[in-house]
Length: 97
Image (cartoon, rainbow, N blue to C red):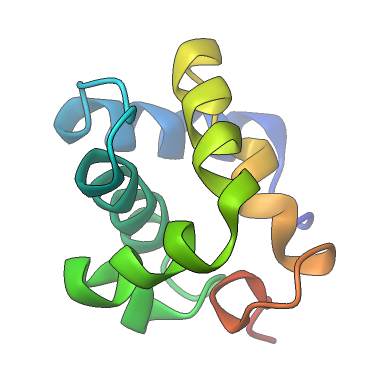
């Protein structure tokens, strides 16, 4: 996802924040936020994690992911989450070429 420029990340952030307006402190909110990040990043993250039931598994499997989602939500920027694809082993974060 590093191929996106700053303006594109900012536009995607605004799309996410329109619908994910609650702090992701509980698993269901973290999963919803993650699903929205994946959904708005069409073609760059595995779209099956744009579905809430699938997105629920990721914060459960990656304990630090929920903390990263909370920090990103507070910063109102999800660029770091989108760019995790190269640093996390989970397929949701693998860039689709």
